Amino acid sequence: MSSLDTDGILFNFATTIKKYISMMPTENFEIIKYSDTYKQQVMTVWEKSVLATHDFLTPIDFKEIKELVNTINFNDFQVFCLVNGKVISGFIGVADKKVEMLFLDPKYFGQGLGQKLLNFAVKKLNADKVDVNEQNSKALKFYQKFGFEIFERTDKDDQGRNYPLLRLKLVD
Image (spheres, rainbow, N blue to C red):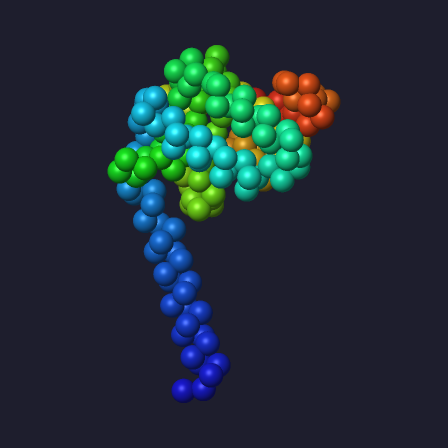
């Protein structure tokens, strides 16, 4: 067997393993209502997700936003967690039919779990709006692929920081 054949076999094996692993998680996950016992895990998922997707934030802004998020009473929203056993892998929060938060542990990006949470929010919580940081192009593409369209742009975020928001609504 030549090295080319060996490389091909290894590539096929690695591709097969990746497909298998990427298919496994969605079968083992369920969506449950948030409880304060999950607060620390939710905060950990939030931080990992933001660090992986919000590279446009300054370190000072990240610290201030983290402190703000830590003060949120998640019981004030319809918050649901994506769990595998007792481990939180993501969460979604809705208020007044608007997705206020959707965060996923980065190790689960691209496996359909964000879509699972968003489907839940749209079908079970009647969510039809979401705001996205303009600089977060992956999130924008995610929501647009789902059927959301931009209807408004702001120059600053809701706290007055220089992070423009794109306001989206679900189009039938």
